[in-house]
Length: 238
Image (cartoon, rainbow, N blue to C red; front, top):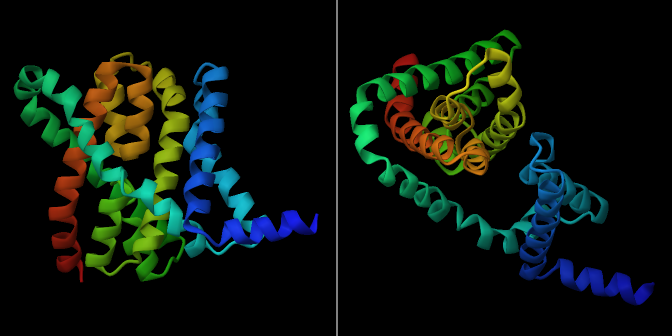
């Protein structure tokens, strides 16, 4: 037992700990996800976060120690988002025809997402820096962190809000769409990408190619428009 504890202490202090733990946990969560036929509640991102969080708490491993290795996976988030452009390229003619309508839709969706979060946060009496961190919750995490830093929020907190928002959308989207009787895969995907960014887009890609394409487009448009407009609005707001 003493040898195992010494081995654990050694491994936990190396950068490979975070990388190995992340990959093994996600592979196990993905296997469960496939086993239950990709049920929304079994989202592998959700259960990977829960499992890794429990391990870090149980072993008292500092987050910076874990992230020293996990950052190698984090770096791939950018290329993964860029890869979403491929399904868009395959549908470029169709997207050109709907360009104006889609731009207006993503503006309305972004305004509703940020505005509702700010109103609820203000009603609950949240501090100003938390409100500013909450505003970009529907923008993919790396972009949300950058926006939060520019508007006076806390980047790390913005990342947490973004991940939670993505998980909520990925878990509840199917049931909400069924309740509202929305059958169009394009509409479903665009709504998920607008409200739940990368995690929602990943879920949409797994469900239907059209849903994934429109989710990726909404994600990209939301990131660009929010990066430009949100700092301007907060500067005007003061």
